[in-house]
Structures are given as C-alpha cells and as structure tokens.
Image 1 (cartoon, rainbow, N blue to C red):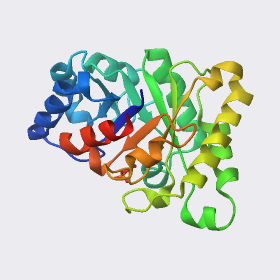
Image 2: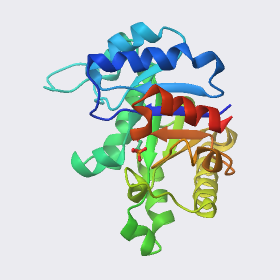
Image 3: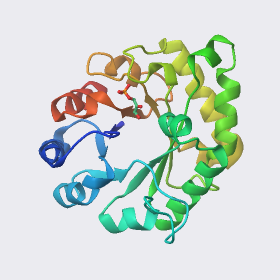
Image 4: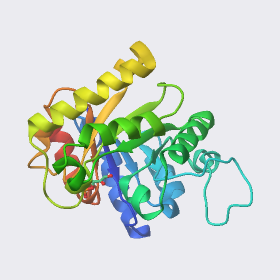
Amino acid sequence: MKLIVGNWKMNGRRAALAEVEAVAAAADTAGARLWLAPPATLVMAAADSAGDRIAIGGQDCHHAEDGAHTGCISAAQLVDAGARFVILGHSERRANQDESDALISAKANAARAAGLDVIVCVGETEAERDGGQAEAVVGGQLQGSLPSGADGLIVAYEPVWAIGTGRVPAEADVAAMHGFIRARLVARYGPAGGEVIILYGGSVKPDNAATLMAVPEVGGALVGGASLKADSLLAIAAASA
Ligand code: 13P
C-alpha cells in the first residue's frame, strides 16, 4: 500500500477540520495509507479528530526540546499535540527560511529522538536540472540533511520546478532519481536503507497519480494543493491502489 501524505502548507483554518474528518472517515477503504500535515494551529484539533484513523503531523520543528526560541515549535511539543510525524527541509523552507542541510539534519535527529517519523524533502531547481546537476544536488542534500539512523525515516523527492506548477517530470526521470536515492540510502544505512519509503512530490493530482505511483521505487506521494480537499486526496489514494 502506498503512503499518501497531504502537506497543507500555510493553508487551512478551523473550517478545514471538516476535510480532516472526511479523510479520516474514509481511511479504511482509501486504498492507501493517509497522513495529513495541517498548519501548526490545527495540529492538535486535527489529531483529536483523526484519532487512530490517520496520522497527523507537523510541517517543521525546532532542533531544541524547549527554550528561548520565540515563534518556534519543538518536536516534543508536536508529539504533545498528537502529531506522529514531521515534514522537514521542504524546498520552500530551504529557500525562504534559509534552512541548511546541517540544520535539517539536526531537526531530523531531534524529531526522531522525540518519537516522530520524519519526512526529509530533497529536490533540484529547474536550472540545476537543466545544468545536469540534479543528482549532484540531491546527493548533497541527502548527504547533509538526513538523520543518523534509517528507522522512522521517509525521503520525499520533490523537484522544485514541479511544485505548484502542474508540471511533472517524465516517468523515466522519476525512476532514475528514485533509484539514485535508493542507492544512496543503502550505501549510507545498509539494508535498512532499502526499507526507507521514498515519496514523490510535485503537482501530484488525481489524473496523474496512477502513472507516478507505478514508477519503480515510488512508495507514495507528498501532495500539496490537491490535499486541501478530502475528495481530491482520496481520489489520489484510490488511483495509487
Ligand atoms: P503541489 O502538490 O501543490 O505541487 O505541492 C507539492 C509539495 O510541495 C508538497 O510538499
């Protein structure tokens, strides 16, 4: 069964909890495992409403457990709110909050120590792909931003140029990059690296999900825009089955 994760980014107010409930209500027959990462303001309410039916997660966390970090949220606080996973190193945070590989790795280790599964995002820009640098860039991100162990780790390959654009890479390019990521994970973690789920993200929609989810080494999807409504997220899950 594929893992389909919705990343709501900075979208969603209380009214959107109805979408969480609709996804949770359909979880048993969805055809995929479903996780949702609403904005931090909704994590606790979403987790209360979802119960054990779907996992709720955060979109970022701090690497310290507590302390003088105004505006930040720790992994332990996410756990306390009912979160079971956290997305780290999304390209929007790498670009807009200047997050480095080293910072993302520190966050990933802190999140694992707190008991959260971690989804570490990697991906090249269009200029980097056009320049033949896609594997070098993703390889560097993997080298620098992963946690020390493979347990509880998920990697999301999200080419930056495919996010929110409606453009997706050719299947052969997805296959090549996922194969490359798998090889790097095995080289780093040994057999445990062979078990890490590798998600594809970037303009996954109900009408392209079946094709993308059938690519070798694609274990599921990280979905932005199409995850905001239960109907489209559930259609992606059904298409991936
Ligand atoms: P879209 O599905 O909106 O392209 O976003 C992908 C993404 O960034 C998920 O983390």
